[in-house]
Image 1 (cartoon, rainbow, N blue to C red):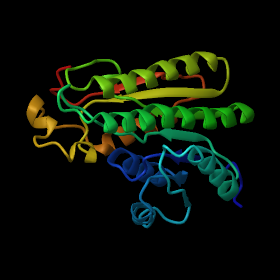
Image 2 (image 1 turned 90 degrees about the vertical axis):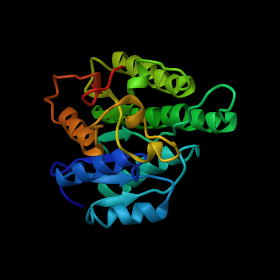
Image 3 (image 1 turned 60 degrees about the vertical axis):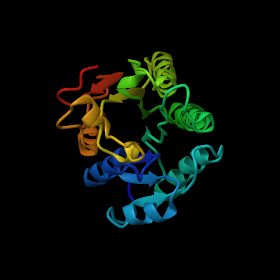
Amino acid sequence: MEDRLVYKVAAITGATGGIGAAVAKTLSQAGWHLVLSARSAEKLRALTSQLGPDVAVVPGDLRDSWLPSAMLSAAIEKFGRCDMCFNNAGLLEVGPIETIDIERVCDMVRVNVEGAFRVAYVFLQHFVREKTGHLINVSSVLGKKVRPTAGAYAATKFAIEALSEALRVELSKTDVQVSCIQPGLVISGFHDRWEVHPSKLMGIAEPLLPKDIARMVLFLLNQPSNVRIPQLMILPKGHEI
């Protein structure tokens, strides 16, 4: 095993989605070792083929209670440490009251709230034991705002915001950090089922790209230890919200 001081290790959920994959690639290029999780083993293999040998994969659904602990165990077993968790996996279900799919909404809550909460606590318990670490939770601009037809999704992100702030305060005098990022409209697979892309609906000519979010994640991680950034909202030009 390499010297523990040579590299750092990040665990990423939702690693094959637009933002997750971009963060994985950006951190890999910056010298981080990675533990990646997503539902599709095939997509994980395709992603890791672009990243080199310093990657472990844990396929699984975030609704499975064993997954966060399995990711942490993979980091310790393969690399001897874990320094950061990018708590990113999520679902999006929106729609008017009359037609929204309630079962899909409940699945979203299981992933965006229950699954994300489990990830947060599993990794923070490890970070507290190690007296160092950084949890980055992915919220949304809709974790601060609401709009018609997206109330359930916004509610899941409001929950992430509340948890993140409480955890940050609890750990504020330690070397364990909690940050929450709030992306605006990002071009990713999130809106593949939409008949009209939200960029058209909102008149946004240049939505954010996943690499824009990845760059901000690296910015958070590159701050000196005395600098804390609890929240970081990232909006594209023209996002009127």
